[in-house]
Image (cartoon, rainbow, N blue to C red; front, top):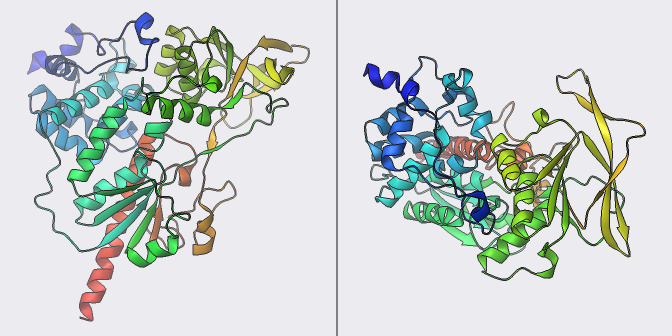
Length: 478
């Protein structure tokens, strides 16, 4: 046992073997695979099982990380997968797309020294993938069906998480989504080199095996009224995400060659799903591309542009590198694949010629104390320059996209358009309508996948509580 406790001294932190850069930029496959079972065990044994697991605290869903790492060490694959699912309905997805460097691995005790954090995310995805391959599925044999039914609007991570937990509580879950595939931005926004779509398809099979029913290509408010959901179901969960892009209001944004990040990524995702050639609008072959924004969506655009044949990709961010909101891993992947970064540059305008983009005018910034702990960029007078740009991709972030029918049903919004849920007199994630709940990006604004997973999970608890109280009340009068 003592040898295992000091495994981190003998075995360095390792990630699964990555595809060489020169090969991976030629296609859209995931850039690294899973650990072998032995590799996962070895990396799991680096955990020192510290008495106060900071990794668990830093995880938004508070995964029982040291506990399932111990199960991995002991070769108890199915038990590890079961424990992972107790807190996280989508571990194979979070293992791929979470910024572990800022969450669990960033808080790992070993990361604070010279040894490097336990590779928690890679172990999480590897174990879940292997368990699925070997036939593991959630055990619902002890679930007692309640006869209650819930409609879930949106098949993104919040909706999928909610549906999983509803089924575990014996509540029927029907998930409606306007897209042709489940996943929301997991499918249409996150490129396959980060999350292969076969992973989402497996999760669909798992959820359908649990009894979740999907109604795809169905938009609430267009194909089915929200009133009909309220009439046909005992409760409704809204997980419609954040699709409204932040407009930087740059002069020249109407020029040909200027894209907003999400439509750009969705168009390429649809092309890949249909196995279609690159259309003219996405043909970046030989072009100079400038991506504006330093978040994970900006990194997705950087790396997609490389794969679409760009001659150069420059990512512009108005603060310094340490202030970037995205994953350090994704910044590193972008650099490896040839992206050039320009920090402390504020875009001022997109310049054109004969209706086409030709350059971006930027100004150098200096960071000044804002009083709130995050320095504010201030333009440096006389420092304006131009960056050559045949194509400009604006990745300034996204806002919540609440459906128009919210206002008609007492579902309140804040000043930023986010759904208001929880608070005084309400259960967590309960809206102003007692039978309607919400979570994920439509409540938070654009945020991490894992936080949407958390919201769906916790909203399902509140829904189950409401339906249980209703059932008890009805029983009293039966």
